[in-house]
Every structure is written in C-alpha cells, then in structure tokens.
Image 1 (cartoon, rainbow, N blue to C red):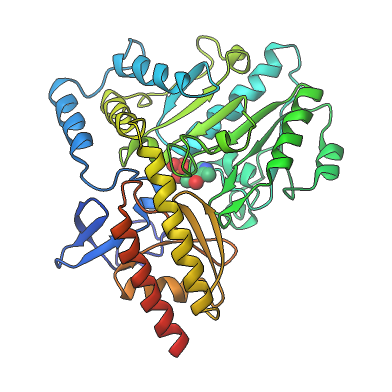
Image 2: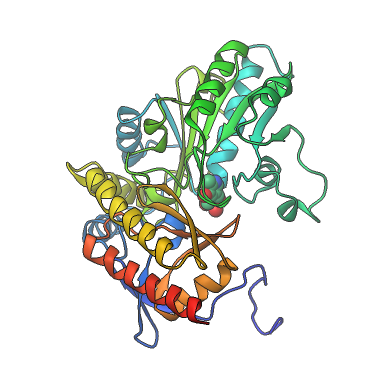
Length: 393
Ligand SMILES: *Cc1c(COP(=O)(O)O)cnc(C)c1O
C-alpha cells in the first residue's frame, strides 16, 4: 500500500523481517530459518555474526568511533598497506559505498589527465549491461535508461558500447577519452564473464593511447570469485579499482585503489570524505582480511564453488524447463532461468532459500564465502525442490 510506509517507495520489498543471523542462516522475527545465498548481495562475505568480526567491531566501539580525516587513522594505514601489498595498487582512498568508490575512480582518472596537461580528456568508455551505482555520475556510467529516466540530463563524459566489440572500442577511443571502465564479471547485468582476450586487448589499447584502465570489483572482489580479486584470474591488472560490498562484511565501507602514477593527480584538497575510513569500518575491514587471507580460505571458496557448479549442472539436466545456463566463478554464480526468473526466486524462497535477481533473467547465488560443502548441498537440495515444483506446475 503506497503511502502506508513513511519510507521512500523505491524498493519493492519482500515482506520478510530478519531479526538475527548465524553464519549462512537468517532468522525471521517469527523464528523461521532461511538459508542465505544472497548475503546482502555479496556483502556478508563471512556470513552473519562472524565471531572475529563481532569482536573487532566491539573492541573498536569501546575505543573510538570517529575522528575526521584531518588526523591520521591507524586502521586506514594498516588496511591500505595490506590492500596494496596484495594487489597491483600503491594508493588507497577509503569511502562508504560502491558508488562512491567508483566516483573516486572516475575523478582519479580525469584528474590524472588534467595534471598531465590534458583537461579535455574526461570521457570514460563503459560497457552495456554495466552497473556502477546510483549516483548521478555512476548512473551515467552504467548507461541504463531505466536508472537515468527522470533525473535530468545524463552527466557528460560517459560513452557506452557493447562488451567484446573490439573494433567498435578502437573507433570509440578519441582525443577526449580518459579511461575504460569495466566489471571483470558483470554482477547486476546477469553474472556475465568478460572474455579474457577482450580484457587483454583493453589493456593494450590503454597502453597505446595513454588511457587508464578501471576495474569495478565492488561485487567480484575480496575472495568472491576464488581469488582475492577477479582480475588475478584474467592476467590483466587495472590502474584503478573500486571495491566495496565484501570488504566490510556487512559494515558500510569501500575503497578506491590505484597505482602511484594513476593517483598522481589526487593532491591535497582535491577530494575528501567525512565518514570514509571511519575507525569502526577500518577495524571490520582489517578483520575481514584476517580471515580471507588465512591459508586455505580462497581454496575453500574455489572448492565449494565447484560443488555448486556440479550440483547446478545436474539440476540443469534434470529440470531443463526451469534451469538454463550456469554462469560465474567461485561463489559468484548465476542461473539463467528458462521461465521468468522471479518465479524461480519465489519458489526458492518457499523452500527458505534466498537468492538475488539480476538482469538477463538470471538468479544469482552469492552465499557467504564461509559456506560449507554440506550447506552448499542443502541449498542445492532446496533449489532442486523448487525446480521440481515448477516443473510439475
Ligand atoms: C553494488 C555495486 C555497485 C554500487 O555499490 P553501492 O554500495 O550500492 O553504491 C557498483 N558496482 C558494482 C559492480 C556493484 O555490484
């Protein structure tokens, strides 16, 4: 009933209220237990109420919640050192959300060319099906009409082409191009993996034309695909990378990572944030990395990912009218539905299994990275029951 709630009507909410969580389980206010293979859209990377994260947050909460970025924040240096040690990057800027990290990435790229004496280089080339957030710049970057409609003129400086069309990409690069920006695996777009050869070609074009390569790893990052970052599996490193979702394990935080060279235009005073790099967020981010960087953790993600892939392939064979192509890497999985994806998601919810819808009629499975093989099999059994009911209907 519109008007009944004082909240903006921007979300079509499912009438379920969760009161607490334990690992991969969410428990409603009525005491019903749901297997959470949505994980807040790849946010609860270590599941719910992970004891190490809870302890880190409580410990920091007793000491200090906030100081402004006018001062040094110990947790920031530590987390930035660990992120740069583990990646291509030399520099990190912390913020609060994925869209903000992408804004920083875009500003970093434009400012790089500005500082090199090329203020005209502002255009970012992005790819169809992309999702980069909901700010005015990031809806322009994502290029989806449904997210831009009614919000005034599209922010200038974003040009979009289909992914994989190398000739068109070459034609599109001009004297005003600053950067190419892409998700190595599209999340909202339907768990669509970008061809490695295309990423290599993008890297080569960036070298040839002096452009910056930006990867949006807001969804794919922090172990989700079986490596710390998805780009590691492609053989292509970006110059700038946005991360968010999984790094906070449920605490709002994000970061933009860059090479020293790419970040060279970001000098004192040109960018800022009130909450970014907040001590509570840094404590949790460091605690997430403690776990994800433990020996064997990423192997576990790959292993359970394979259990899922095998199980999903079997279900696809058994219920071809319901389950189509299986997509993704590690624990970022997509099921192309052969009936309206919403019907499949609803049938899964009936079996108390949570998933996330995506574009291209795809259902995403994004379980906590801590999901066990046994829990994976339980989820597959529930999905099987949902598919069985839909096939019989
Ligand atoms: C979720 C997401 C964003 C936006 O993150 P917010 O925290 O919602 O601003 C950007 N890019 C990708 C790939 C995402 O999955």
